[in-house]
Image 1: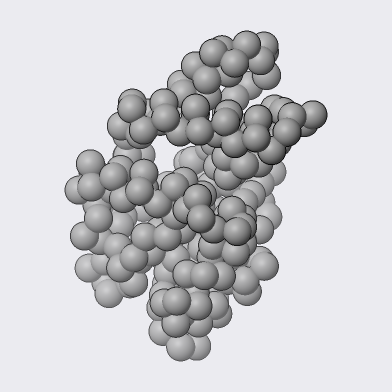
Image 2: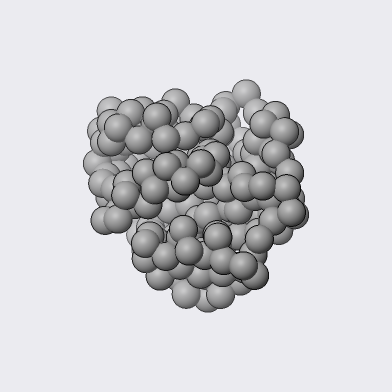
Length: 208
């Protein structure tokens, strides 16, 4: 959040767009979604330019203005040790996601990283998760989507994947309740995905 909100605030100030209210709501959705909200009467060119200026700020400084939630690294390491296949599915542009994983020395825990790309026709997480499942030959019923925002839950639902809400993240409680299960802390993740009531039929392929 610090890197995203900081660059959002700076970009909006430079564009003289005034008070847009709490900017935390823009942590999670694709950039294209919030540019449409902020510039409802703007042209496509205006929105593209706003997104470009934000990403330029994020490229300079925002990407490294963040930290790993306590317990997440240990949770990922334990899932990896148990033989789970881990993937990243994020609305963040892919090169930023890879850079951040490298910064925190987490890249080696993931089988593949799927982020947004400028050349994609769709910037929806629904379509991105579909691409991940298809290209990695994953069975939806054998996978978990773990995230903290409604966009993660919607992507999972649309693709037939179970969703687990990370309640320690940035999503409000009303979003978390729409998931199949809720983890209050990273330490609860392993137990939830291995619980008897959630046993998949064809092995494990967690998706994060």
